[in-house]
Length: 412
Image (cartoon, rainbow, N blue to C red; front, side, top):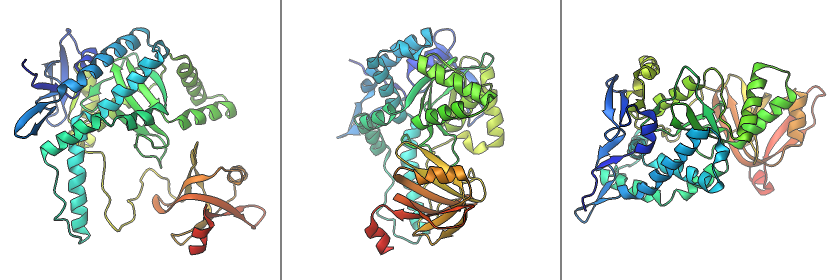
C-alpha cells in the first residue's frame, strides 16, 4: 500500500469550506505579499510533514489525523447548515473540543515555536554570562517526535477547553472570515491578561466557514457581561452583551458588532506563520494593511518570548499608567486603581478611596494571585495571599497583602 506524502497541517475538510469551484482555494503568502489560486490538495500542506525517521527508516504518522479530520467534516457540516451550536449532541461537542486540541499542535507554528524557544533560552543564558553549551537546539526529527507525542497528550488541553463557554459567531454580511495556516487564534481583552489556554479572560477562535467561527471564552467573560447587563443603563454595549448572552444560551450564532469580521481576520493575519486562505482574493486586503504597518509579521515562528534572566519582566504597554493592583481568584479577575503604595518587593500595601472597591476587597474570597503594576511595570507578584485592612482615615481604606500561611509572613 502506497502511503501519502502530501500531509496537511490544515485539514482539507476545513479548507473546502473556504474554497471555490469545489477543489480550489485562494492563498495569500505574507512573505511575498502575493495571492494566487491553488488546489485544496496543495494548500495547507507540506510533503512528508507528518513523518519521523526511526532506525534509518521514514515512519509516516499522517494516519493518526484521519479520524480527527472525518469528525471535523461532520461537525462543520452540521454547524454550517443550522448555525446552531445546540444542534450538536454532547458527544459531538466533545469531539469538537478534541478537534481544536489536535489542531493546536499539528501546525508549523507549533514546531517552529519549539525551536524558537530553545534558541531564545540559549541566547538569554549567554547574555547573562551563564554556560549554555549543554543546551542543544532540537533537531528537526526531534521536533517531529515531540509533535507526534503531543497527539497522545491532548487530554490536558481538552480538559482546559472543556471549562470554557462555547458559542458560534457569524461574520458581517459584507465581510467574510478568512483562515490561516494557524487557524486556532487567541485574544485577551484585559490589559493584564495573556494568551495561555487556561489564562483568565482568554478568548479562543476557530473559523469553520466564511460565515461562521466557533469561539471558546473564559467563563469569567460571560460573568462580567451578565453583571454589566444587570447594572448598567441602556447603551449599545449593553445591547451587544445581551445579544451575545441570549445567543450563546440558545446556541444560535451571534455577532460581536460591526467589527466582527475585521477583528477575527486580523487575528488570523497576525497569528499565522505565513499563509492565509479564502474563497475571494479581496478578503486579503486586510493582510496588506497589517503588513504595511507591521512587516515583522511576514513570517512568524513563535508567539512566545523568553524574558531576560535576572531582569524584571518587560513593561506591559497595554496597562495604563499609574498604580494598579491586579487580582485573580478562583472565579474572577479584575484590576483596581490604587494609591499610597508601599512596596519592598516581598510584601506591599495600598490604599483605595473607592467605597465600591473597599466593599469588594473586604469580602473577597481567597486570592490565588495578586500583582502590582506601576506605570505598566510589574513590580510585585504574589500567590496564595489574603488582604488585611489597616486602620486609616475615614475617606480611604488601606490594605496590606499577606501570605495565606502565617509562617511565610513571619519569615518575611
